[in-house]
Every structure is written in C-alpha cells, then in structure tokens.
Image 1 (cartoon, rainbow, N blue to C red):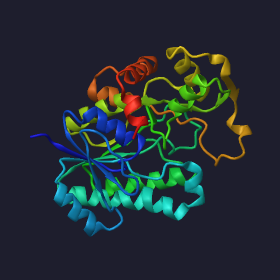
Image 2: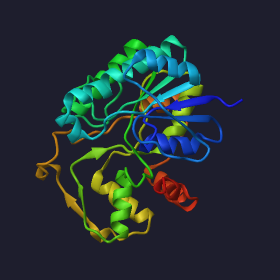
Image 3: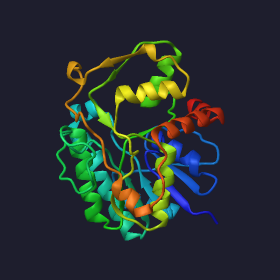
Image 4: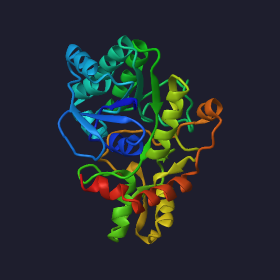
Length: 304
C-alpha cells in the first residue's frame, strides 16, 4: 500500500509540481481552500485550516503519513496591504497544522521562504538571527517559530524555487521563457541576489530528508548565488532564446515594490553535510526544466 501525502496549498505552483513528481510512488491528496483543479492520478480535498477541531477531523479521515504544508499568502505586496490576513495565514494556520500533526504523530514538512533577512549578508546559514523587512517575511518568520514550538519533529524548509506554472499562476521562469518566446523586452534586476532551485530537485531532496527522519530548519537551495538578471540570461541560453530582449534593471528604481531584501541567498552547506549527495548545478536544473517541457509537464499544468 502506498504511503499518503497531504499537500496543502493544493492549487499552487509547488503543490502541483510536487504531486506530478510523486504521484506514481505515493498516494497524493492535494488540499485546497478555494480553487479546485483536476490532475490525473491525484486526489483533491477541500480542507478547512482555520478551525483546529475541523482540521483534526479531516486529518483523521485522510490518515496521511506525511503532511507538506505549502499553503500561504506569497504575494509580498498583498501581504503588506492585508497584514492581519497575512499574519493569520502565514503565521497562525501553520501552528494549527503543526499542533495536529504532532498530536497524531504525522511527519510534517513546512515550506518557508528566503525572505527572512535584511539582505545585508550573502549565503545566510540556518542559525542566522532573522531580520525580515516586510509583512510577508515577518509572517513567515512567525510561522516558522510556531511550527517548531508546536511540533519539534517538523522539517522546516527555507527555499526559493522555480518550475512550470499554470495559466492562473505563473512562475519567475515562466515569465522569462514566455516573454522571450513572444520577443518582449524583460527588465530583470541586476542588484537582487538569490539561490533558486528547481521544484523537482527541491522535492527529491525533501523526500530524502523525510526518509532519513531529519528535522529542524534546512536551507534547500542551489549552490550558485545569482542575480535575477543572470538567472534570466542563463535560462535563455539553455532554452535557446535571444538574450537581447533582457534588459538590466535595478530594484532601487522600482517604487511600486514593497521594501524587500536585495540579497536573499542562502547557504546549503548544512544540507550538503547532512546528506552528502551532489546537488545539480543551476544550469543542469534548467536543462531538466527543458526536459520537463518535452515530456508534457508544462502542458499538463497549463491546461489545468
């Protein structure tokens, strides 16, 4: 009998890609709140995360072996505009998930973020003191703290991922690939650094950590610290697209964006020490993204 994995945020970028990757090996249940989609070989269930008793009853009816909590508010500007809602969804709801998973002895993975620091230090390690600059970062930081307090066995993953999106929710890599294929000029920041990782790589490493019963906070990111502009140039080259449409820009000149860290890069040294497995280079992961398109992953997600 296959083990069951419940993934919250079931209509989101991470959850859908994760489901496609794991559906042959596990029984996948995608928990959703508002948007229900249909994905072959995957079950969907409307789940209430607001009420702890209702959530516990729903978990008892599903009986998952693993819960991956990937739900949340991720739009940084919207979080700033609706701060109370962001604090509840990104902070308090993860606490409920953590408390019930601990009570029922269910393995918990909490997907966090790299927006937890002020951006003054590159390649931040897991033990760095958190200094978030905006409501999104503050709310995710609260979520981390409450998850760890409520479930000391939880695995908390800090990351920044890319992969194929849907018609209603595109990814950063979608934005670049689609824009260049349409020969649109794209302005990408040359002063914002991050350590992005392909969702497929992220999921494989996550399951390796779960199977080895590793908990605590782990940065799951690529080794390369790269700017958004450099990411776009590399992605264009891998996909054989013309880089002349990529224009350098600066986050300083974008007054519409909420204050955010210029350097979101995380160190993956702890991960390397724990698993002693090679992590593909960013270029290798982009080649894998291209292969995913060839085998129909992008098409399947776009037609949801």
